[in-house]
Image 1 (cartoon, rainbow, N blue to C red):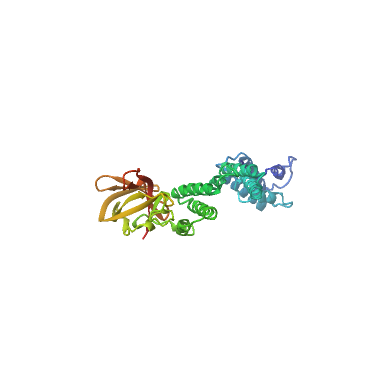
Image 2: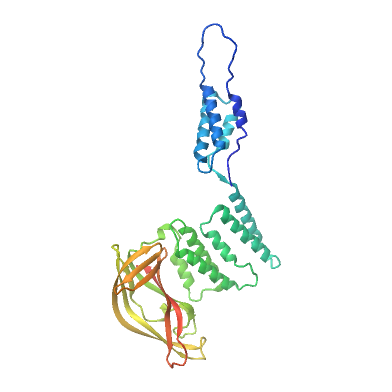
Length: 371
């Protein structure tokens, strides 16, 4: 709740009205200077308006009242300092959200207790901290960083798999990052980096992909946001489940480094709303059952040269880039601050060469960075 400065001193201001002498006066008529009385009356009126100010007109009415008091001091003097004390109370005429300050303090205390929690009281202190963060969002608002903290807390279950929770938190932070605005970019970018570093600490990062993403995020300053116009080069091909695509007993979600295809693949956006999608090769996946391997299969990848350039028209809606290809098909790129990605449901499909097992199917994402 927005709280205005105290108005108790208004009672003292009323004492500054100049009294009029009603006794008959005989002699020379003297024209009295009533500027002090006028200044005092102006202060009283300004104080009444300020006391009734709404949130919308608080600042202007506060400033008017402060100016009136300062004028009264200049005109009438302020021997005992009461008027100046009222001016000091008004300060910068900004509204103070006392509930927000209290919520921040409560959340900080709850976090301190949560970090010091032991197994016996972990769930209770975690829940208190999560509720305190939720309340802080309600009264103070949120740039996304508080909600990320809440997501990291999960269900406050001590026996939950910490790696699974870390991955889930990273996924949520990534989704927020992919829907950035210029206003919240820095906050959600740092929240995403924190989630990635937390995942590395808890789960590890065998293939280095998580650290590579952190490096690409840079310093999370607005200048890191690159324009869509220009040439984007394929850097990652990510599948929705870890695969050992080169049969070296090491699984990864980034199969780009595991295959010899897609060496030259670019997407170019021109300022006039046209573009060109170039592909040098296309990959075809198959597999054979091998129950002696870690994942039970051996993959085979065949690369076929196509050297195809496809023209398209594009429009941007928020962080989505809709590209209508020659022929009428439309594909949707997602533009994060410095990354362009193309998500294709069930885009990875490997058929069994013996036709005795079903196709292995996963979602796939092609990730591009600016040249």
